[in-house]
Image 1 (tube, one colour):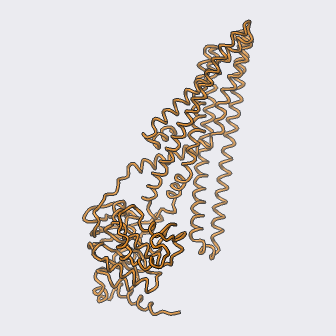
Image 2 (tube, rainbow, N blue to C red):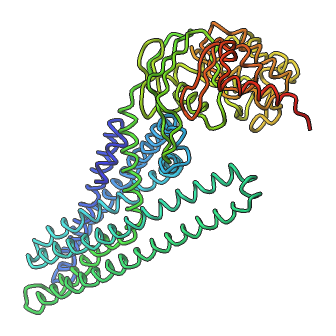
Length: 565
């Protein structure tokens, strides 16, 4: 039910606003219905023997309409506050859901739905509460209240009014149901188009070079257009149905009033007034025909938001942990991607606190996936991850770890803005020294306050990586994870990053995914992954002496260092 969904989304904080909106809208409707029914005695007096007797009815109508107008104005303000409550809920719960989203779903239906809820549902909700809920309440109350008023004129007309109202609402909900199904299909098409455009923008050099990008986007646009036409095709029969029912209702009410007039049970002036009452009844419900499509969209949006808010309320907050190196243990951990790809298989691993553990393996062996699981960016499909001897979920691990990725993404602003991100008290001088960022700052015009441009384009790749390392070190986390952070760096910059990791050894538990011998050389232990399983593990020298998978990889890496073009 759409009203229950609105209450669940806006919560107790807007209970008073919802009550005021509903109450004032209902009061306005009753007053408007009373003013409409007053036309019957007004017309009778006006066209009777004493026209001056109509003045009291005129005065009563004016009072009802003025009070109804004031109630509508107050209801609008309360409705706007409720609408802003929907925006708050969408932003709060939507952002929280995005932060909890598994990175494997970033291009899936769940991510698309979240983007829609956060970016479009908020602004639409402000207008929907006022422009859609108000007419719905007016239509739902006006017909029965008018019918009750007609009991004082003719019970036959009252019965006709109740039947007419039931028919009009039946036509509305029938058309809404048809439009709702098409609306869901159209929304799915929009999300599909959004995903494909996002993927094309992300990987357009590759797609354009292969010649498949424009064709893929064109196919999705064609499907979206087809579903849009289907939505219109369902909307037209609903509008026609409502129009036919409205005309039948007018005919039925007019015929009833005419029959009563011809039988002498109703005066001519009263019959004329009842035509206005009938028109008012059809007008109020007739506006619903225009609301079928937006009603279906709003109903779906509020249902999605209710689910989102419930998930946010039920989410357990991450447990805080004192900063410092923490041991990490994985037991029978497996991970399966949504497409069915098995990335990790029964991984058992113990990472000692304060040590540097390096993960190596061939491309596709599951290295980055394992790092994401340890970081809390993914929840394992099977098995468990313990940190500092305690079982954890993704939120716990994410709160207690920091990550340096292969590509460091920076936001517009200053260097300080990109390093101090969570309001923690940070010794910037110490962080700059550990990350070897001090030499970068010395070459910038304003040091920490230097603007770095869109995406950090004022910095080189190596300088961005040092900012990324400084950002990770500024977070008070016991586990530092590094994913191929030096693969695209020159030798001098790589040496600076390696030196930084060596200097912080012992202060944090460090896990590094790499294929660079310079990083492997500082490892306390090495983990070799092959096809998602742990093939070998141990100190570097021991693995080299075994002559296994690691020894073969080591020889390949050493040989590739001598390649020249």
